[in-house]
Image 1 (spheres, rainbow, N blue to C red):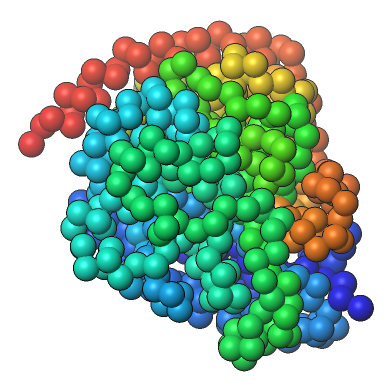
Image 2: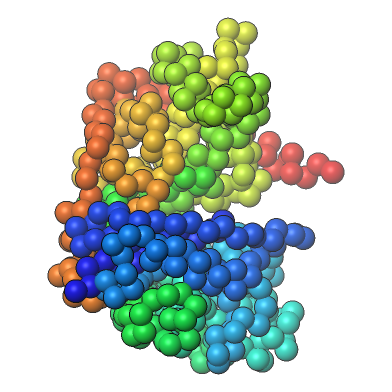
Length: 510
């Protein structure tokens, strides 16, 4: 009897294959890396065949785990990075490298959408600002700059949808991924006529849209030969990585929320209706559960700020610890936890890679404000942790201000969630109970696995995710600390307003 779910998390740097049992226990995993080509003016591409090779390799590895045979895999499902563009022919062969989420070359094409539809109307239709990072502008760029490729294209797909096509021969996507294209109407769950007309993208080149639980088909004989999966194994579409992470964190009912702390950082919540921000700071995806939405605020700068600080300032200690087989972050945390909250009135603005939420400002940069001769590396380290959390608090306040009914609990996942000090800082700044689940890095693939289980009838609904999430650490907010942080939070917000013009002036320098 089939008793396992195989989930793939197709990330920017590699694919992780994970096998779960029906209780959500992680049984086996395997990771295969692949390159990303960054070039020119904000261009980022990957070879879709590298994804496929990684899928095949990692699948064969987990199927080689003792006790797991192909016949015991009940289904395979996917999470994948979003907002990309994969041009394929009728046999699912890629016609050019995939333009991925990190690519923003299509500025002119996004501006055409804005000129024809309007930023506010586009936001109300799609739940997102009309920007070059989304799929619509990228497809338009190919139309404008590579007309021969455009004419040969049968379908434009997302990361995971390309893999589904390779496994089944079917060209489909799910609501969550489609909602990150600047082409889908959030309310009708269909391609938006105004945006289709403005973009001049023929509907025929877009995939069919289904719930994340839709069974696209069975593994073909050819795909079976390459992956080792049994012929006919059900292939469930799954969803985009953000919505999958929400399910993997147990955020499957109204009022539940999670905070992802990876290189970037974001807060996502579950709601019955989309929440539109008049300032367009936040955006809205369709949840893996088709009855829900996922309003989200995402910052470019989460764990990356901490990583940068460790690399740039703790350089010598990092090298010594690496030679000893350890990492710098344990030392940084021990030093920072001895520093009183507020780091002696020191602020860190974490915008070292520009920002998208809460401020849409590509010119924004990082800054320490309030330095004095008594500050040490430990003070600066604590200020970095607090600055990232303050920035997430702005997003949290924005979501709650839109009517998002967020409860007292906030689940936190991603690499940054491993830090006990950072979790307590979050609790005190947010005034939320911060809960760390056992599964941090695999939350995204667990979400895909739940979609697979619902799609094949192993689980009745997405509420199954709540039963799979095991809390291992809980941090209660300290009322005194929260009151202290509230004072500093107001200064943090005003600091950005006061230096915003300086960021623009720096950007204009030759």
